[in-house]
Length: 275
View 1 (cartoon, rainbow, N blue to C red):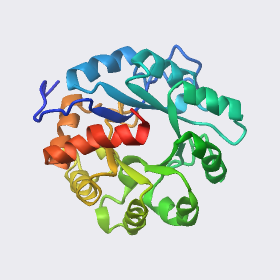
View 2 (view 1 turned 90 degrees about the vertical axis):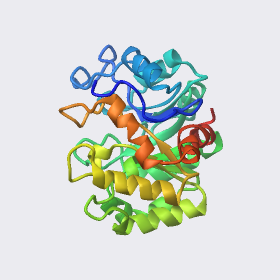
View 3 (view 1 turned 30 degrees about the vertical axis):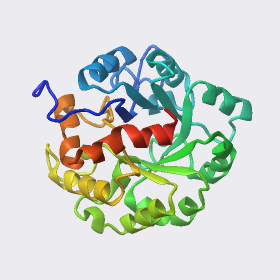
């Protein structure tokens, strides 16, 4: 690793609120081996980085089968882990209850790339009503143009809403992207959270992704009590994997005060995910 220590003091009970466990031992679409990132591999990283809490997000190789996700939560420990599942409208209420008992606290709709999306936004609003009593959130991975196109539907979501990867704002525009105004208004409403994650997804430059840093800082300054951070392990979009310490040390640039880091890494995820 390029850097083997953190440049800041990780707060107590810090949470990595966005990562994927991709274990090819579970039935998958054939891509799990090339995207591999197991619980054992992540546990070593979490210990080294001082991240005792985790939010595992269902990975696309497993489609609607959340078995690997539940296994990861169980092995990391229910006291320290939560999950975000992927289901469609055919899911039974009994299955939702089973997922809740297993540590799931939300549903993800990753539709940024329509070619590999496994769910439809048509199910988003109906499912949001079905999971509301569980205290779950709806997690949206959409491009900024999709946020604008789907604004009416998103505003109707009467539950906690989590926006993936900084809203995938146009990196040439940052917070000048028209989608940012929509997200600001939703955050002000009180039910919307934004994940500071995936700088390599929000950039036109190479590491250290200075344009993404500028956007992340602006979001953190606007909504310190409505942001969480995630590493996006195991970085399935990247041919050359970023160094985990370099990536984690960006936190001190995105969130330059101790208070901001405590909120994003400990207090906010505890409130959002029920730690």
